[in-house]
Length: 107
Image (tube, rainbow, N blue to C red):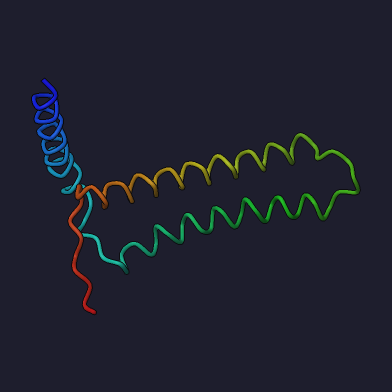
């Protein structure tokens, strides 16, 4: 019985990879190291804005609780950052699992 389950799971994994590649790959041009830079910069800039806002809150406060508007701004920056990080992780997973074609580097 275990052998049947293992075979089923192996086939499931194979088909999942093939279907994901079939659906996802045409939506995104072939990846290159240089082509990833804009996406990585987008995430890094969101992280920088989020952290900068936190440091500005700390520098401007004299021990007082931040205002609701300051919390709202920080929360919005966190949501943007979290969303971009999650998207970047999804891209990383797609690359690792072979859902996207990757152009070989010229090195």
